[in-house]
Amino acid sequence: MNQQDLLQFAIRGLEVERERIDGLLADLKAQLRGVPAAITGSKAKAKARTMSAQGRANIRAALKRRWQAFHEKKGGTKPVVKKKRVLSKAQLEAMRKNAAKARAAALKKAADTK
Image (cartoon, rainbow, N blue to C red):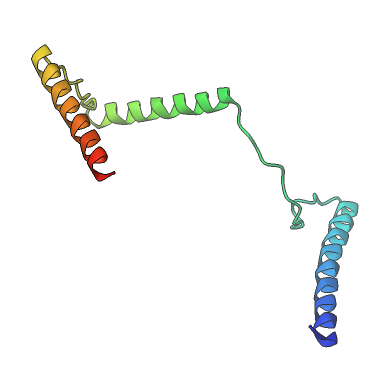
């Protein structure tokens, strides 16, 4: 890096600093005139807004009510709830045997490859 490059970097850094200072000056002048800083286009970062659990619950409940009203208005069909699969004792036992066989085969295969 030569002298020319260093000077160019220094100039760029100072220009950025001047832009920042100009923005701050514009905000201060606007405040003197009575204009809020947010309107002047300040680049200051706003504090992140968070929502409480109660607020999220309220929004969730309102959304649920809106969708319910929408579906009632549209035709009142409720979504189909898929019933949980019920296995007989024989089916459950067969599944357990197959799983045990698969585990034994996997262990045997792992032992054979070593």
